[in-house]
Image: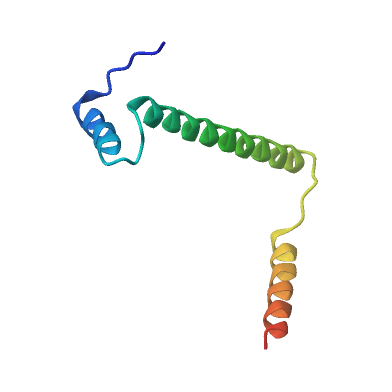
Length: 85
């Protein structure tokens, strides 16, 4: 069992969430908070992995010059705009 001192401001916030019926209990509020943190940490880990792959690609020379990429993107978005006309 976890016991936590949230401090007055957070304790009041949690209590208000329960008293307004948004959550059934303080434990439910805290579980939701931990789930949100868990999700955020998973997204951060995925971002870190993506950055590491990008850096490895750059170090291995698997890159394209920026102007070539920008030209390709400009052509793509011009074509998308022409399709919508």
